Image (cartoon, rainbow, N blue to C red; front, side, top):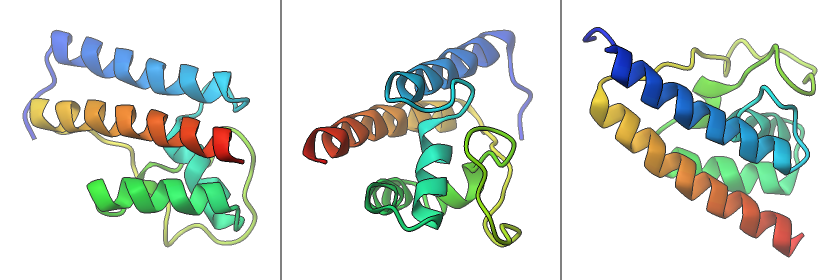
Length: 116
């Protein structure tokens, strides 16, 4: 994996902070991403979490499994070894894909909140 440039790190930090802000505005934990919150909701059987994770996983295979933040937000009971992963970003194409995923996730999350 190529080294992350300072500009790339800045872009990544901005994207993650936008994701966390959107989660906070929707009533979530301030330091947790929408994807992580969705994965936890999916694990506890909440319909909106299942819908979000299906959308995200369609665009990025196993996205919810890889980005769950066990140390942030609401705790989830049970064994998470099979789904817990590391949130990692690759090269610039990965960041661009992440931006697109974040925009789609925000739109889907807003839609689910409006419909529920």
